[in-house]
Length: 626
Image (cartoon, rainbow, N blue to C red):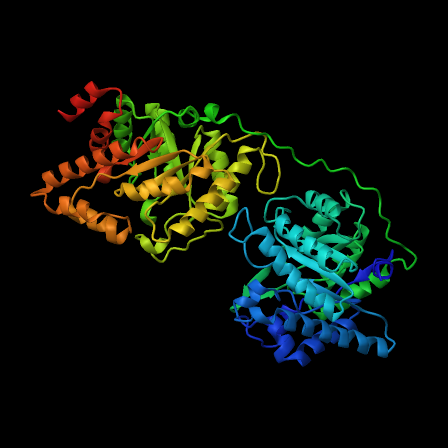
């Protein structure tokens, strides 16, 4: 079977299934894979049209037939049934063709991406992803496919898990793996086609290539690059161009003639298998078949020895003590003092700069700058960090959230931050927009804080998420958040463990008012040996305490609420809030390696007063308070 499928001649695959279904009135939000059960005659008719157009390989209608994608339609329990039906329908079409003595066709089990983001950038574990692929592949194998096509893989780690699953479950079946690339010719994880080809060859694929993407031109360039890095047969199955909105519908505008021209160019570039993805129809395949016939019938595919692709090497970061002032304090076990300065809502940050200058003069080690807290529109945290460092000399800790950025802009921002001298990053998921003053704003959340830590750690090792070199280490000191008072403490502990495993080097807690919770949390995370900085918030009023307790869900003991309630006036309330914060600092100090003190409403003098017991310049502090 392997020799027959991978003979040294061009082979034509079929085109899109979803495009044809959509063109025949199947609603876009339907589960197309489920049609194997509810409307098998429709799927059979499409397969037969592709065969009549000249296709030699039929992909089963199982692109999304895995537990994750089917689960969105309440069909996670029907993985085996839907995949088996998909194979049965395609086999029936292929048998009809053979009975008519019109030629032979092979049935390929189509396996698409899971539709979830995998570790290290997402919450789905690699083992969990592999199990899902194994479940689908087991069903395809049992139903009798001739080969497996793992396609439209956006990232190499997912392609690897799918390939491992295939080799484990069905080692006798040929396996082809196709990546998808963006208009810059990169996988969505940043990997180059030649890098992908080298790794997929090393991992044991029988054929590899590129499909979907932004159209024929992009896929052709990817195939040319892949040919330099592998001796394996190549597959090229592009979209029919980029979709264009026409009267409310997305239309693919590449003509059959253009796809035929692509087929000729792809074969000459070294591809052995050509076909189509989104937007292609039997008409496109028919034109591609004619193009292949026009090629010299005596020509054969020649697989030249590929050039050796050197994989990017890591550039490890310098030791923690040399990366930043904060890093050196943490590495040496010194008690760290941080004060939080929130960016302004406008363009004037003179108050914030003066506050940072005053705190620096008192001996505060660094300034924490939140990233649009509570999803509010403010000056960028990165901008304020740079201005504070340049104008006052004190180091900053950049809070960086995933809310507003995809994985491309995250990497761009962090590379820029490093080049401008920012060395401390606190990795946060970020508050959703619905909490802020623009609740209808769109959130991104390509990754959460765990995935962000992984990205920063890779940048610290001189590589982007696609394992491409960035020319050196970003040398960030990596911090994360922790919340000892969260209701679901077990989930918080699990996430904390994942953050540490991803590369976190210290943690800053949410504001602490209950020392019992902090002590219990620290006891639970002793095994990780990671320094913890306690968050301290000076309450300014009973209303402020109620907001923290009810809106922000911060654990607030009744004794603290009572003390704030007994304050006779605003000044007394502020004084009581400072005393409570000072007591929290005194109790926490033996347990943690530092404190971060917030300055509510820009009252930086309050933060300084709380830190009086640990700041070196008490005379300057007294002068500030007088």
